[in-house]
Image (cartoon, rainbow, N blue to C red; front, side, top):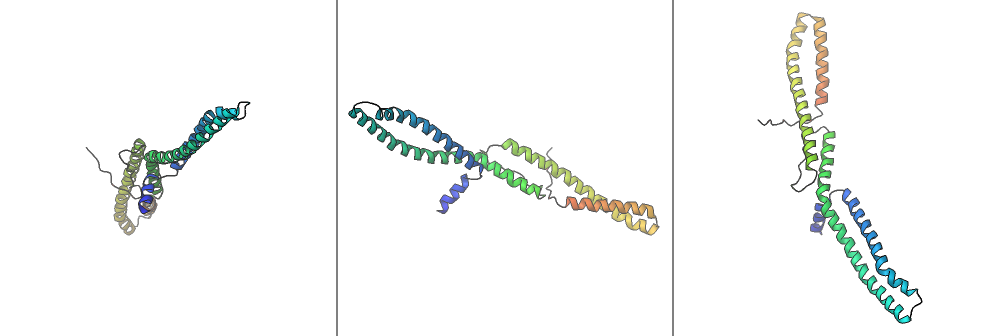
Length: 200
């Protein structure tokens, strides 16, 4: 049972697969209904027509034989359609699931996350765009963090000197800059940034 569960979980990844499977089943049922009308229609009409009893018996036998075969074929077709639909759509569902997980982590401030897809997955182009976007964000926020650290080092050197020299106006302005620095640090602290490797 564990193996079946893991195999099912391997291919059933996202709720969107259930929607596609339902669409396939509805189309199959519609096709079956039309096929049933075309197969059962002529013999059924004979049953209610004014024809000899022998012909009605032949028509009823034909209806019963068709019904026995059709129900078995319908059940097998529904099962196979559902399995094939889930198997085929997992190449799209996998990337969608990874997009959702990545976006959730981005919302939490983790800009180090990147989307990794399998070779046969769809939506690779979109994953590359999202990765490029996070690379740009990571690079920009990394630069901000670096500038903030440098600003902090400069201010930490200046503030004690200004305090001893009694230059109150300058000291007040620099303290204001320090407050802005602290606010920037609080904002940037929410983000987890991975350094971007630059290729020549």
